[in-house]
Length: 131
Image 1 (cartoon, rainbow, N blue to C red):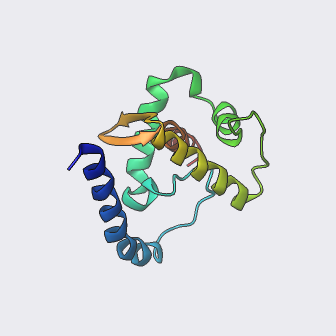
Image 2 (cartoon, rainbow, N blue to C red):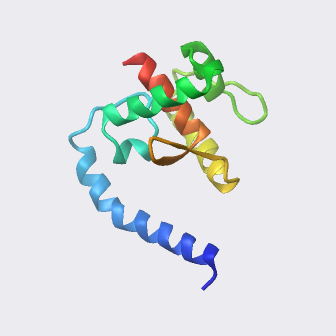
């Protein structure tokens, strides 16, 4: 079996196996604006871990240590179009799209042992600044 096929099969299996866990764990979690909480990473990490990831990213990327800068980067799509932060469903859709595109393009980083996309790192950084 090719390595790529194996990795994709393993990832698909992991997703299918975690659906029941995510469903039952979501019932007791706080609800955050999608701008500050990465959807998938938020399923696996507690708030303190998200904050640590965000702090680590902000200390490493000095130019993204500001709420306004992070918000602007997160709310702007690949074409330069900015969406309104008050439309939570549009924000969630944009961030999920950006995250998926970054994973497909292997635009990932390692923060605190987690392999995450730049978008997820920025969400964690914004979370660490807002809470």
